[in-house]
Image (cartoon, rainbow, N blue to C red; front, side, top):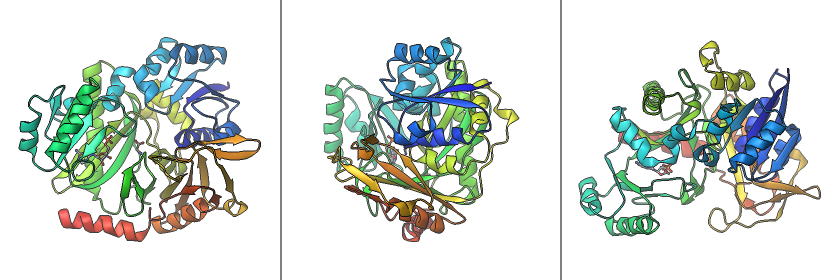
Length: 438
Ligand code: AMP
Ligand code: GLY
């Protein structure tokens, strides 16, 4: 039987998902509903249509027309809209949690309350506000290291951190006022100091199977400077840990993901089916929780799916059917490095609509994943966001870095990337930082 699958989303993460499905032994016909045309995904699927995937009625109509039996939801916005709920109502299986369960990502206060209520380790001191009443005294209680989080999806722009975006309590109060003026809620919390990493788990509502730990680089420029972005690049090590982590750190992060999935089940009355993404910080006081996402990370998906050994369709089927306990998911014992090329001016004032070229030296090296890039008159045109990613896979991070770096340098146009991601210089800095604070 041919499995008809609908992929929602059209970034490099979704290109990685499409490539992983394309390697499956199963007979698959892939469709994609996209926010922009993606030439990489288009090559793999039967049809890619550019339509609003938050228009649930339209997605369901299209899915019925194509006799879709399984959908994989890439980005967070349709999870918040409740697309997964509607698919299940139509008896279409889904990889991606229902709306209530996705609140682990879509509401910062929900995520914090869940950790506190269920006594899950790693929660900071925090309070949720809808007015300035009590904010100043809570900030005084926390001190100089604080974070203010808008309580909703804001495309990575809702979180402001002391010492980075906010210099003092007065700045913090100004930002809180902005949120209040927009009728929003916000969370004020303690800022953790340490090294960030992410650990994603496949989750079928009962069983979790964990993926390798990954470190992303959120800042736009070399040396972790410049504005925050969606993530400029990522790496994993051959042992599925990171050079600055201990085995016990990984174990703790995995246990926190398990506890979160159990807590979600108790809170929402049903299990979480999808990718549970824990964002953690290794600190002097152990592993702390920064945030949760309800989907694959981007670029993190490219690292893990590049070394996945198990058939990805079988995983998706097991996640959505509650049969993950029947699978043993494995990854190659290889290191990976992913680097994004982004438009000049990204993220604040990116150039848009310019052609980019890929020279033929790229062919025998690593792999490309297309993101915000269109194909017009046989030319690749960048659309203004993260444009194309290159992934290197090798025995060591250093070798993988060299492959990713060479490959991304084959992309020409008004773009830049972070050449330091995955280099020993920046990794040694992380190790030294952890040694100093532990
Ligand atoms: P989020 O949108 O929750 O991922 O937050 C964006 C970024 O803000 C994270 O990647 C962290 O770098 C930073 N951040 C969020 N919460 C904290 C915290 N409690 N302590 C330190 N940094 C944080
Ligand atoms: N790379 C971080 C994210 O996908 O949210």
